[in-house]
Length: 150
Image 1 (spheres, rainbow, N blue to C red):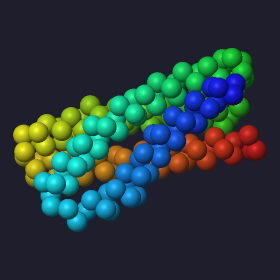
Image 2 (spheres, rainbow, N blue to C red):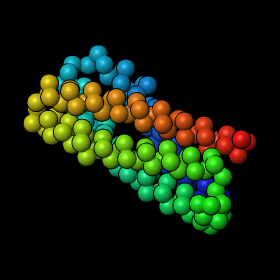
Image 3 (tube, helix red, strand yellow):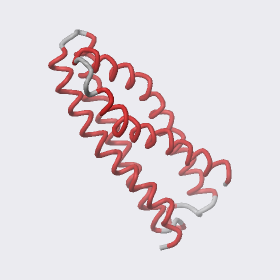
């Protein structure tokens, strides 16, 4: 159990912590940059961050369902907070997949073609999606940390 929960928490820290850093620190810091420089920076940042998110998703699913079946006796044995955490986590994964296969692909293509006004439009979409997923991630952390006391 200790290994599974440790991997689970580390994956959450990487994903949610990365979103927090990107949204609360990097975004305001990159704001004053020239448009082309800012968009190229975000392109490089996402290209490096998204493989970590995919890895986090794999680790979260493996560790979460490992704990669910090895220690909680399956879905029926998991308390409400585990079910809530699972539900929000699945929504977060679906939101990320939408971001990755939609706005991110269009943003990346626009940056590579040097169509910066188009890229800026997709970056604004990505920003809103990341903001929503960050809120869901923080909520999931609260549920996971406090749920056993409900």
